[in-house]
Amino acid sequence: MKTLEVHIIQSFPVTCLNRDDVGAPKSALFGGVERARVSSQSWKRAIRLMAKELAPNTFGGDRTRYIIPAMEKALEARGLATADAAKAARELANAAFGKADEKHEGAVKTLFYTSPLELEAVASAYCGETDDKKKVKAAIKVLQGSVKDKADIAIFGRMVADDHSLTVEGAGMFSHAIATHKTNSEIDFFTAVDDLKPEDSEGAGHMNTSEFNSACYYRYIALNLDLLNGKSHLECLSPDEIKQVVATFIRSSILAVPGARKNSMMGFNPPEYVLGTIRTGQPVSLVNAFEKPVKASGGGYVEESVRRLEEKFQWMEKTYGFKPSVVLRIPETGLDDFCKGLVDHV
Image 1 (tube, rainbow, N blue to C red):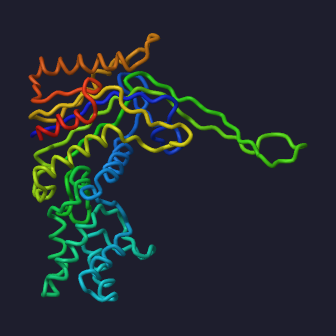
Image 2: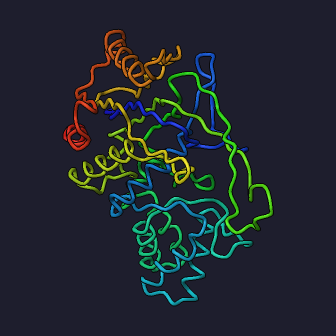
Image 3: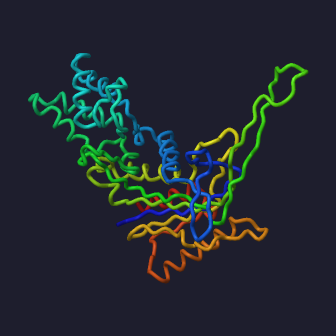
């Protein structure tokens, strides 16, 4: 397996990037102490939204339950009458997209990850089949193939419980981000002033509490480059287009930040350190560099976290023979050159 790996050290003060069911920052026990945590799902969404903004022609996917109206439009564009398109869209939904939800107009019962070009291909196959009994089967088969705006589905994957043949294994692999050190959540008590309250009234217009933390995180992201080029992934793209996809993914992975409480806590700090490699072999996280929690000792967490990361990287090379063909680092290399340096070897 040819693997692209990115190891990130990223520090955030006073944030709640990812909340649990009671609104508190997520956490995890590691190395016997509590650490701040941001789930991979949370960061993946931020990454794919940024990738879509940067390269909408290749990262065109949408994950939605409201797929039937989009399917109807695609069928109408292929010449079907409105009534026939509506009927065909529901038929396809029940066969491939998770079954129509009778309680919500235009929705199916489960989220389905698809793209505009994929829906167009489905509509084309359906309308192009002359045998009515084979129309749905021909259309569904298209979902197993490759289209040019499906890069996000190829990287992040698609799970379809009703039809496993439509499942796409994600070429991207993401760890949960965890703090390199022990962390504790804190409580912010806040009040809001009523600007128009009578002068003789007392008290705040509103008061409440919210939890937050501050942490230096280790993040690990890997990309299976062999799988990415596969038949059900991005086989239809040219080598240059594949490189553009990978470059967009790397940039988004480094810069994207979950948007929770973005206006009140402004958690948009870019990484302090990024280690990028390309090598042959299974993906391997360096998180055990922080199994013993980093201690600040008045000097912060970033510097010691970077030292630990590099030390573990060298240990992995010496002990297990992990020898990357490419090794690049930010800030030794700027972001543009970092992306180019990795992409040139994809």
